[in-house]
Image (cartoon, rainbow, N blue to C red; front, side):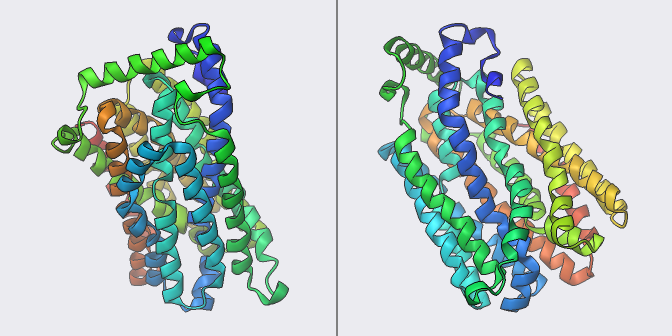
Length: 428
């Protein structure tokens, strides 16, 4: 996968070797951290039925509780990225991970609906800034022409989290009754612990800026520092490079709207898909978790292919729009054939290919449209607005399920959202 970072002519030696070394040091760690982050925010989807039973949650209440993660998450995205720029990514990302790991583990102690909702808010507060912080961190180390592929490699963590999380959660749930704890309590405790451990690893591995990289040879460090300075200069000359200019940028607000709509669909699917597949197919245990993982596994290869193609062609908008429409088509297939298990899985596989492949390209587009002086605020603001969509999506699905008794209305609404997203991204 890392060879994808070094395939352009501009990355000629020593650049190719330097970028490969940077990629080997940072991308695997960022990937693993994001797997854990995604698992800790969406693992409620794997125990939705158990939580509804033990905490007395209706479909709407579960959807609200699952989405409440994004309340504190959205409010603190911008402040978190500003702090990261001031204190450095190494210390701030480590702080985020250790804090969210502790909160994730403590969720095992909730005993009623309001406690669970509070825990979800606190988890969002603790994790706020992780994703935009990593995106911002990559802008310090990788040229713009490398970022769709870099982003794709990093964002492969989201589907991997479900591929791993579905069967892992099924195994953990078998601990139900051990030491007097329910299976979902063991799940929150066990899946929260790696974040704390990885936070300590981050302290030893991340380096804030290329000029601080003592693990690079002096000539490598000099080349990368100069290359990134040139990259920042090129973006600054063509785009909004101040915070004041950023907030008057039509492109910024269109990007916020696009990511808001995308997040509605993304988190509605992440937090409801395991329950939807289990309820519709009547599969249980490992069969249900394996079936849930299939669409995400299929999406992995497409993510890297689409990212490389976008970088090679230098095209972002049409790729993001096409991915949104592909996702909508997949959801329509799923709702039309939801009583036929393999057609349902096929529909969701197409949806995941579009949804996940568009993510890396979207963030490459956002980074290109933002100047260096405003990148920390702009990236965080887009992600914060998207976080509101992360609350709306699961809540919408829960409300539609309670009102209609089925998933058809919710899936149709998500498909409509994606069509609007495709139109907006072409206008950025």
